[in-house]
Image (cartoon, rainbow, N blue to C red; front, side, top):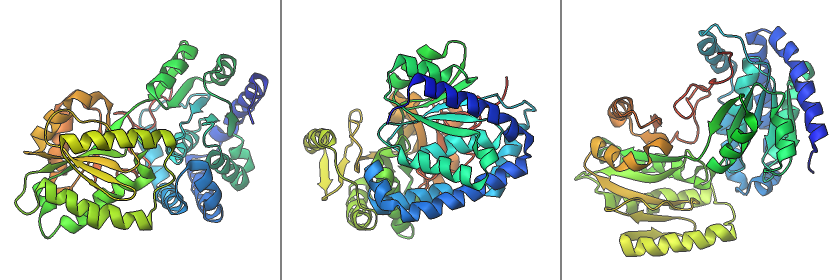
Length: 400
């Protein structure tokens, strides 16, 4: 199914008109509606996990984990707190937002849709042509919970790059949020003119394990947390760690950490949260990445994962799908020095509790970095109010 330009314009007009009802409702009413919709959607995911697995390319257990950890952040208390933070500026909501979704992390649509609706901003969403089921389920949950408020969100579907359809998508909006590659962002920017562009382009993430996290008392928890960060969404998202910096430690040097990560973390999770099917193009890239990794460092592999211990030279980015580098480092400062070449693309830095203050200090001190820090094990489950690309999650949704 593909919507033509006239259908896109009709839905845009209807969504924009429904914004009046959204703004008439109180913040508490919108928060209650969104929280109830999230509960409804979570129940529906449980009965449609097989269809979502086929649609997303993830395993059914991974789909269930992703939906649960994302939708449970959409509770009335968290929504009210976020709205209060955003409304401190005193600005009114914009009249309408258009959103262009990527297909790699299916739950990314939740924050991209829920936050503007919470603030009274109606949303027209272009689904990724690769994954249309979950956004449609979210739309339906919003409509069924409250038809009046639900009219403030609708979907369109078409292949990216179509100038006429993209122009129809953006022309009625005051701002356009784009999730996708830098090429996609640049293409939409050319259509926006003087409209505000909220760009969420290419990004990578990393993890940092300090020596405290590698102690005998804590190593088990560290391995479990890092493994979850790597496996979540099959390492397909910009919040997925591609590299794990491991501080030199007597209790558990980098090579031993990698061995434990493989045997005690990634291997068990390959059963509990199986990887989805490997696309042919990714399989070819994976074979190349692993071949070079064997030459440049030490490679450990299982049926659905691989770890390269790499202690020199620039990082070679993997194709995702649970292929990750472990890099020994002499501390937080040295890790940040190593990350400097990709500082502008760094989205998230997961770290252990003992190192977090030091990591946040470095992020604040080094202007090139726009990432935010979070605890290991939570990289792919950000809270509703987590910043995005160095900016508040409500950036661009309120009038300047």
